[in-house]
Length: 77
View 1 (tube, rainbow, N blue to C red):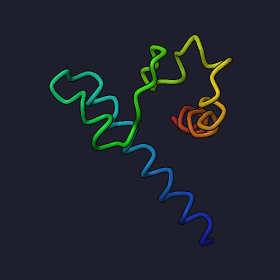
View 2 (tube, helix red, strand yellow; view 1 turned 45 degrees about the vertical axis):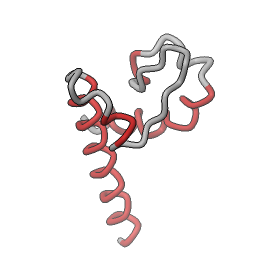
View 3 (spheres, rainbow, N blue to C red; view 1 turned 60 degrees about the horizontal axis):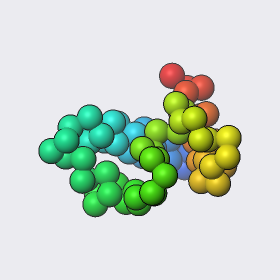
């Protein structure tokens, strides 16, 4: 039961982060917030942080770290 509550809280936080990321990514005036507010870092390989459509995800070391979250997000929508 407690694990379900924690899982739901994590899912809610993740969904809110993704929503903010999309908002900031699509608004040039707020683009900097991706790094300052959401804590993402800059990667000098053309990474835009949106893994599902990335052509490099099969060879990306970071994708392995995040793929479960991306798959869960798309599975639940």
